Length: 474
Ligand SMILES: Cc1ncc(COP(=O)(O)O)c(C=O)c1O
Image (cartoon, rainbow, N blue to C red; front, side, top):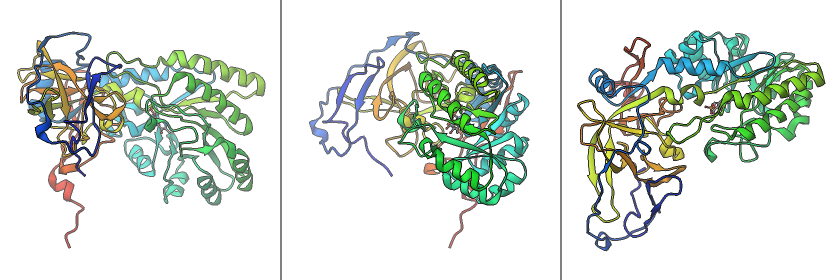
């Protein structure tokens, strides 16, 4: 489906955003203003000196490395940084805990086998969201008993996986019933919706009455009935309330989750999910795991005093491990201007929602850094709207914060056609969550920067023949 920048002439409300200094243009759909109604005078754009506070910085690549990456692999390309992945894994493993900790990588964040293997070597286990993810993790070297499955779509083949040792968290009463019918007397986990959620955006909030994830906490009696009916042994309680959650809500839910553990005497571990906020833009804050974890550790200790049960803690971060571990290197393949006083200079990248969907989906902010074709940072800055290469007006890299429908201008190093643009913060929910093959754009390759500074391909660029491989002509 293609929409247009429909209201870009008459119905525009241009104002200074309260959240940033960028110009924000609200788009309303369905307007049919005529071109003649525009002021034809071209907006004069100032070219400013670089202002370090407004222009983002490269994270782990140098400008020369950005150029090198394009020469070796072409663009667009995802570049992961092995050292950042390892550092984040180490920080996650230091999460405060009273009686033991298992860190599960929420592999939905980026499921490439080399990333899985990196975390396997770091001693992490896996949180899978589908039966297929389970198989993918096993192919990367994890054993079934290192994998916990919490899924919206219970696979037909779950019995085969459970027989091999997979840990299943029932996420609805019908999943619990299915499991009980197949495996009476067996160990199981229960994922609850504790009645409270919190996410960076409404789309990433997965708790509370507006969320379908997990068993609604008030259905506890029905749950206990099914557990008794099938003589199941509930050994794990699981709650995950959203991505980018408010640490205060997360902590409150931790307490509520401990209350749920009290209802099931066989529970030995509590999984508090992921959701730890990570700043991608320089002004955004990241969650300090030691800070949020400490009161939870105390709550586990108090639980132990009260019940005599020392529960193990599980966490399953995705964003925390991946968000700032990857940069997408792209090329500015075109520049167009809309020549009115309310117009913009648009940079068209050779990537977009096919690689980094989060801006279009959530209004997520990703740092964008221009590197000249000579491999240098531009000394001048200018305001741009940056768009992706899809035939879709929603393919926007610079939406207003949390408003995917709203165009926002961003101050970037001055860009010429053929320059490089690096999209930082592209590790979590990017390669794994793109609008793959839209407009028949092939999947971009993934590359790992090793500790020795080499760049190794971990997924090749897709070909058009591969896109067509399963098509059947009739
Ligand atoms: C069950 C579950 N656990 C963990 C995560 C990871 O969340 P995050 O990437 O915010 O850490 C998710 C994300 O959707 C999830 O659904």
